[in-house]
Length: 228
Image (cartoon, rainbow, N blue to C red):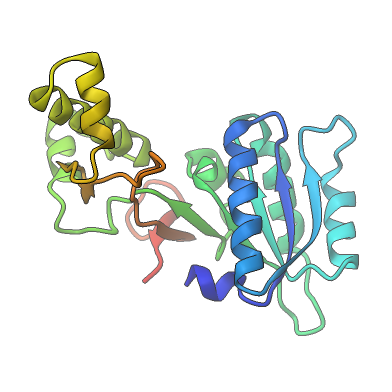
């Protein structure tokens, strides 16, 4: 689904130059677009004091953008949601809005309450979602312990503890832990999938894609649901 989204699309990218995570997301996304034959027609730094959501959106349209990648972080979420709201009012010659892709920083209640209706159909990439793996025991156990739904941040924190615990059990020294985590055959059980790492140190982590739809079960009017 992600590859279908970016293939042959003309993208405008919004990011925060003051955020390492936003910069990293932007860099990886631009590379992926290039490899899939797409093109980035505009880049906008939402941390710029002169940033205007309306002007940036209009400029992206004028440059032929067919889709937006919103590399938000917590400090720039408001600016990004303004762009989402502007897009909901836009229609191209085919009567369509721009496709919107974004990362895990927009996965929060504020996005649902402020821009829920306007953000319907937006694609959000996450490392984990409770409904993406119905057989996983982690969300059920967490609900029994704490009585609340857990999110990707909780799952990733759990996985970090699992990885460290496994490494410490096998080689309980500072150097030993580092060696274990970087070993090609390292393995630990995570919240939804085995924990393994690439030689670069990045985790081998399948991406879960979710979108925003009217809610059938949540206390909120809208909710994040996995994309089949």
